[in-house]
Length: 426
Image (tube, rainbow, N blue to C red; front, side, top):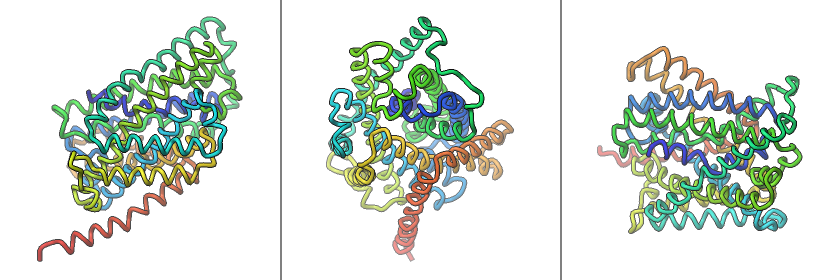
């Protein structure tokens, strides 16, 4: 079940939209995927060892607080929450992009895709506010359908290669491989692997978490990474860049090019369902995380209030309101442009949490709070360097937005500390 949580949270709209963003990079994207999977496995190993040493709920927030104290823990919780609602904007955009295959006017009428994206988010917010059980039933149905289009693309790519050989593959020229291209591609590909830490968050509900969570984190990350490498590389290298660039449904266009129009529609339908299911699960988290932090006294207390059904309605409404603002501020962008920008922003926000967790593993070893080993030290250093490198690769605009959103949490943290002091018994 923990492996399913990791894989299910990673497989959403990211893989279905990424080929359009990666099209300009060609073989740089393949190298980027390899580096991303390597970095993600290093991060997964760090999370696995942290979870084994500290099998408590909270994931990145809990580990950072153990190593660096409450202020750093708050900043990581804040950045992780930002990555949730920002990432949900990208997932919702991906869902609507594939719906445009069936309703082309979504892509042609200015601002319509943004309006539908926002409507979709609020519909799922309402469902999650109604109750987690209703959201869970929907999640089971959509999760079953996630792997079908990915397997279909893998089979079609194999058929194309068998029929045409290397003739349809984008030729590899070593001169085309550049550090800038690889770095940019690696940052984009990490978006599809965000969520590798998912099994660490509900640790208190996992049987034998010290053993189960590390295994699930590593197995889930490796399994998803291999699928992504094969599927995305096949789409990018077997489709002319002009077809993919700016495409609102790159997987569907790949299937339409090599398999026919009916197959294209079927693929688009499955992709939209997969993205919709992922969005449902992440909308649940974007409400539950601030609720849990508020219960712990980290976020404002009004977010800890629940409805009669026991759902954190206020936390859900706040997260979705911020998501709505982000989408509407960028409504003029095309769906492909909007997805790329928001994916980079969500990745940048997540990387702050990943970087702190890698540094936490190093610090906790030095302080004797967890078992030290040469392997963990080396891997944690690699994970920290990888996180910093990928943060650089996100580009100035996304990183600047990420820093601004991160710093916006400082006044709230200072206010919470002041309230705690005033409420403390004399």
